[in-house]
Length: 198
Image (cartoon, rainbow, N blue to C red; front, side, top):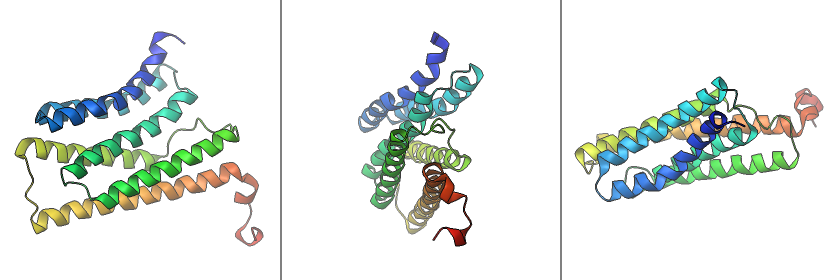
């Protein structure tokens, strides 16, 4: 593997390494700098996949790391937002639980040495990750620009509505993942008619 083929994986790993930097800077009142670093880190999620395909550097390791890093990156920043009282605890708990379930599913599949493990994430999963990054970015920018957000009824309703939408999307991603998980582990059962499964 040449140096170019390592760059996508290094970009993926950089998102995890930048998490403590973002949190430290944000808590030390360097909020605009932290928000800028977050934007750069979020962009690596687009760049790493593009470069991996362009340079023919798609690997099983990269395919495994990318969604795991996305979940860790989002969970870390939602924890920061919860500290800033901009993320409800229930959403953080839901996000972490879904991430753990998907990771556990991957471990089960890898234990079965399934040949489809290197598959790309679903379009729904990509949309979910993109919307989470967009929402985190919006809240960081607002917090960096205006400091503490005054939680009026309207603001609280808007924040709750958006988190509700993200939660529905996360659950839909988990459901589609479970269907795929079942088809990979039990292909014969998945192909049966509903009346033949029982």
